Length: 200
View 1: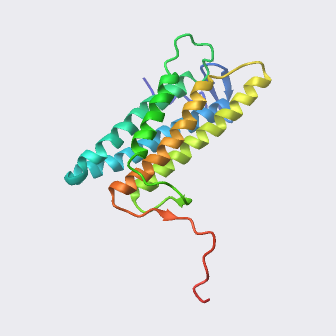
View 2: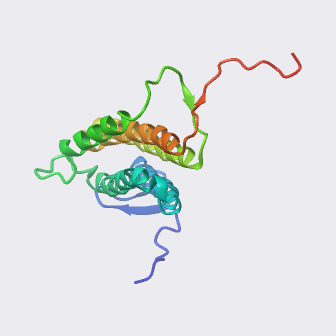
View 3: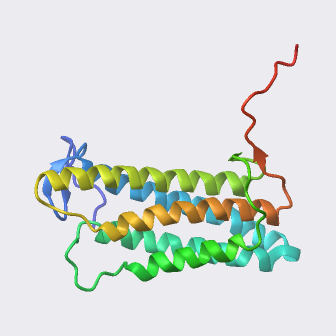
């Protein structure tokens, strides 16, 4: 089977639900953003997996985070597949997936101090990669909501559970990024609203 077909050379592509559409259509943008988010989670997971192998002292601490990202990546792929199936009687992505994410957030949060300040990405490679994944998931959520609004205007619907999953996953990735700093024994970067010039 050839990877290239040439059928999209004029700016159109096939979509399972809407047929032949422009590559600039919102449903194609949704697919692209899901694809990007899935890849960014993998990008983050590989950094954590490398740390897990290199640091035997903290191997057990990294392991649950690696497992959480592996699971999230798989479920996000499922969310992308069932987003346009709003009437599925046996939805492969359901409320249990959201509850599982909430339980994961609560579990990792028990190890973290209370958050009283805004923090910015940084402090470790793992933290930055997890925040990049979080931003990608947020973008997938935003464009999915735009698709939902457009579909509503045409009397159609999307699987709202998939959008809820994106919302909860971005929260989880934020918590995971903080947890990664904790394992790395790094200090969070606190947002400073005002930084004086060095000459002052």
